[in-house]
Length: 191
Image 1 (cartoon, rainbow, N blue to C red):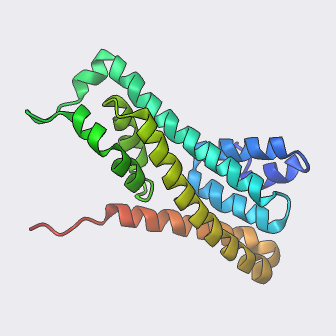
Image 2 (image 1 turned 90 degrees about the vertical axis):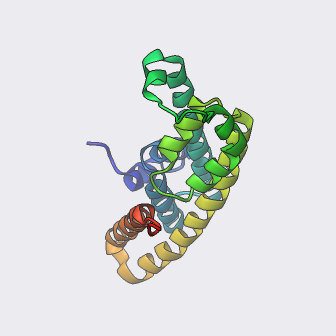
Image 3 (image 1 turned 60 degrees about the horizontal axis):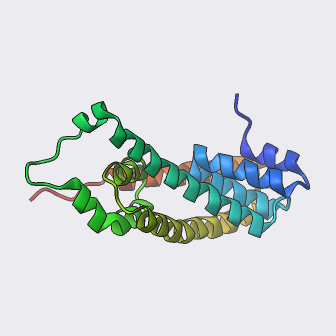
């Protein structure tokens, strides 16, 4: 079974390099949960805030670039190209090139949208420079916001729940994930 983030960070002790590596790997598994749990560890004391935020930013952006890269690799595989059917007259490559910044930036805030949209950006050869710039900007905003909220919630949980703080943080992380899923599933009414 994969060990959870807080014990790994606690075991890392005084090794900032190991702490950063654990945080980066955790972002590949579940970004928002890694952000929330890392903020809790900062609040508890074993992890320094600059290290935590830096590792979160690096891990998330590298993961985003990895999704883009998977899309580029899929575009090189002939069966994958046959699976993509665009309406006649629609040029996916040109559309993604024109809208890459907006796609990347907006999908950062819509749960479940990153995987398909980031790989599509790679598949349709959107500018890697524009993709990376949008990924960095959106990550800086979203991760910093979620981290700041998690610090506040984490302090409240430490102050009021003591040893039960991890149960409270798990509930907070689950709430964030469920709210994200609900927001992603809401559709505008049909006309």
